[in-house]
Length: 216
Length: 216
DNA sequence: TGCTCACAAACATACCGCTGGTATGTATTA
DNA sequence: TAATACATACCAGCGGTATGTTTGTGAGCA
Image (cartoon, rainbow over all chains, first blue to last red; front, side, top):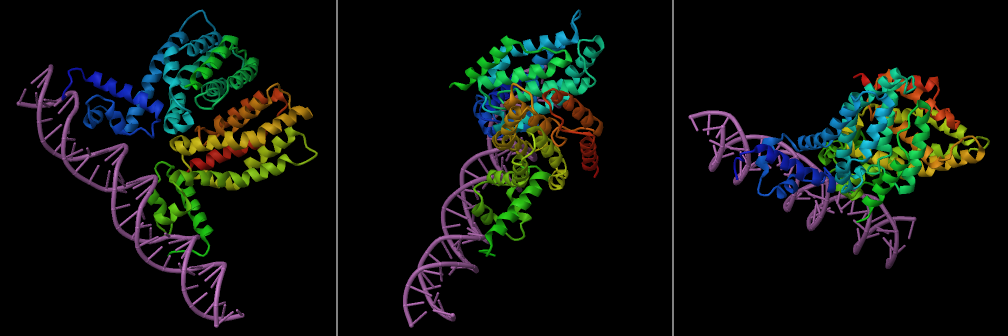
């Protein structure tokens, strides 16, 4: 099985298998042999032709996870006739409705037991998402008057950190009741800044997600 | 060198060396041989007599790191003639003045590059510190009227998470200017609940810590 | 009270399977 | 024909274990 005519198929196959394993077993406990065994005949040579290291695979996996989502965020960000606060609102409701991400994450155990993956996830948050999408949006919001704060950068940082980490049931395990309380407190916190990001249907969606991902 | 008269000295020696290495090199990149090399003649047999695994050492290291600090927190919590809000305030100013922790942490690189350590740190936060110290204190605050919220549990969770993770320069790298902005926003956030935890001197202390830990 | 001796405590040593990574070989396609 | 897209063979080092060795210790006896 040497020399596939379409090597990007091999590349993608490695990413698919790795994503599945990284989420179910965790990055650290997934060995290269685990990956190879699910590659359907391919061997270690194929992996190290397309990637430089195991860590390199993880980076590619996370980037691909974020990319499609980020593209949609970018589209929303450049929509016209919307205030920045409204754009942010739209982004949140889109994120919550993202079935693809939901399916991917529903198979994973607590990310605190997958520490290397978690660390890269947070890094991506701070190198890509917050500086490229959220902070510019917050500054835009201050200018158009839809967001009221003296600290737009830090507020954007805070909001993303809270919603993506603190309110993330994959990182901090929660009951449905707990997440709804957290969201209500979150709403109370950001209300003085003119932000209303998570409504009653969002709460319901989060509760359902927890209920769904806990049974097996 | 078999059979030390005082085996707890050996136990402690392993912990001291491990702490040093876990902080400087990171847990994952510290091998048992690294530890053994700094043990002064002791070998792998000594380690596996006192500990069951490498992970077991990490748990013991973190527990010992937290214990002395927690003891002080407990003392403050049971002081009388103080409102819960005042106790919390006292805890914060004590934590910031804890030279021991400061020295330990000043040698460590970004904890996002030490993911297993970070994950255990966060776990400890949620299994020990928040449920045993903070949540009871928040409920006490609601009762004595010094803290005003409908969600005492979640507010305690949030405050600890923000101050120990989001405002932790060892986890999320920051400039002195950035941390002061974050603290100012934090103060603004918790003010509606009746809390005033970090004053101007606290900001200065945090800025100095960042300046200190960055030069080498 | 002092001495002995068995025994468990406190290690040391040797070894193991597996890991991520590399060097080199080989078939295929452009 | 030569670069591409792999396969194969091999490596040092890892965490962990099984087993050996020494030494402190406390019960029992004189």
